[in-house]
Length: 113
Length: 115
Image 1 (cartoon, rainbow over the protein chains, first blue to last red):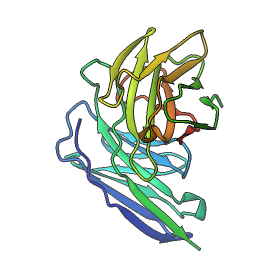
Image 2 (image 1 turned 30 degrees about the vertical axis):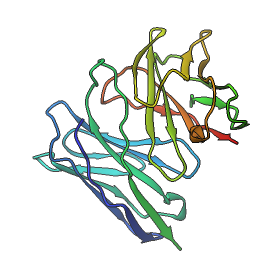
Image 3 (image 1 turned 180 degrees about the vertical axis):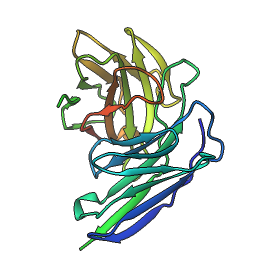
Image 4 (image 1 turned 90 degrees about the horizontal axis):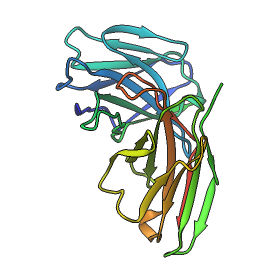
């Protein structure tokens, strides 16, 4: 599984755009980049996934440069309820041909009023 | 929208006791997982389950742990003799197919407190 590096924490204010960059220098050809969000005392929740270029949904955008060695999750106009931990995950199937998620420490995003 | 459910939401037990954590995955999903998260730490994979057998397990998932799908809907995690260090949030997850591009749906978790 490709190792990922992302900032430990980020602070923002309501209405601002938050961009979290994840480095994954050893990403493999078959790997997708997936971001999950976790609120306190809740299970992680899928936000967005991409393979290359740009992906946008109702929650976020994901920017992936051509070399795919990094990706940036963009949260537009955050609100207090976007305060959460955001995880960047990169990987393919495991040795058993199953797929377990390997979470790192994630980025704790704190949105202030 | 379909969701994964877990019961109980909070379980308190004495060290050495057996606990069973229950999960109801999304009905058309075929792959099931248990993860745990010790307070303040990262989410850790415990075990994956497919076609009525364990497909992968981590080092954490020792002989004290077992999983079962006793019927067509429930997926359980049993800890035979709980230890203080088993105190954590336990999350069940399910997915329709096992690949890097399939979303895993997580339940709300069971907070296990071992006294």
